[in-house]
Image (cartoon, rainbow, N blue to C red; front, side, top):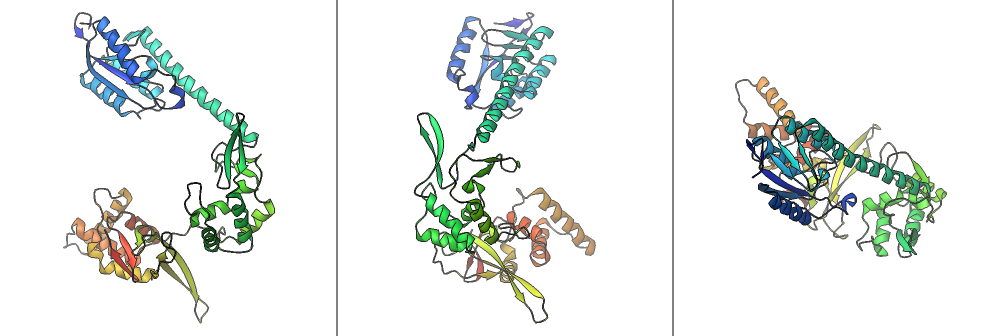
Length: 424
């Protein structure tokens, strides 16, 4: 039995790891690592008290659950030695490496044994361990930089390094990859922009796409949100931004489906102005409502009515998106009617206290303090406080407060016969 200084009995944990990422495809398999190190343990009379394995990348610190448990076992004294194929199986980042060295400094980790080397709590061996693990990190960092450099070169050549949008597909011929127009979907993409340039709405364009049975690559109908995303995509006239949001633009080498002029005309007609960008309006009750009849999602819509004195009243309506059943007969429900319906069933609207968002919990606690300040003789329970807070937010709260509240409701509601009904 192996001992250090004839006093400390070494209790080893055999740790095997292999990541599924491309940089470790050539690494020895987990089964092979366990077999080789088990054979070594028998040959050298090494006591293995535990065998663990995991398939995680070691690039980032603290991301491997089995390794983190292993550190806990070392701190508790359950094991004091590590048996692994190579140093880079333990760490390829500075954080995890530092944890191992700290444990060696604290004399909790007595020895690390790899197939060809041993590392104990001596300055030279700890230095060598850090050198080998740091070399693995350097290889990772260099590999990442090389990948980024390759992506930039590809972009400068005019090829976007990801799946092209609907209307195109990747083609490989004689080992050369190319982006070509999809003969089935390319033509209706061009027609979409022509319709948009004429001032047709997104819903009208979607109805037209449904009428010609246009589908995505997976054979599913094209959704309204996808229609707008496609109409805003400059890839179709020959340019692209990469990464998205970086402000770095490239001229594509693919064949454009539309001209820049047609794209610009479409943008002017799309109901997506900077003041009211499409999808930017917040309709707080939309996300937790569904259609009772067909199960489609609910969309919000605002209308303005001009009064005799010239002022405008804003009204919000919720109705079926008709994604499931285009001919769904479910009627709309105004936000005023919805709030009245929610107040009527407020006793059944409960908030999950265990998974409540911290900011909502703070708001409810603040509301409770306000209630008890107004009525110091009354002590409100959590249930009473939540119920009163929900009533306050539904009646007088801001859109943000309403959105925050409905995100935490653990009931599901549907619109049916211009009413809100509980379905789960």
